[in-house]
Image 1 (cartoon, rainbow, N blue to C red):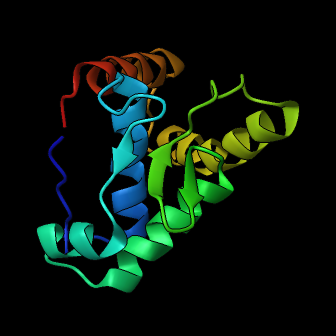
Image 2 (image 1 turned 180 degrees about the vertical axis):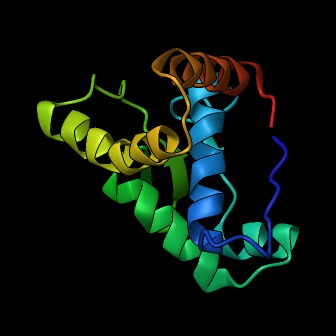
Length: 129
């Protein structure tokens, strides 16, 4: 799996890393029960601070996408990730809403935004950045 961090992005590095790992899970590149590198090894491979990788891992653990097992390492959630709860759906809607509002202000039609969403879903599934 290829990880690309954009240093000049407004998105914190740990979120960029977490988001790319989430995409890897979504595409099936990272499979349930598969091990991830240790914090130290991953940080060295990516040329970033260990605390940044640790923060990304804990963010993913909070979302229950990974498990951090003391002295054993980090693994992709070995149990099937359940379908989104009503609260999780609402959290996603709350995050998407301002982006859609911005699209409306920029005079994008509903159809254009739906097409954009479909294209992004397809790109994620196909691994297109």
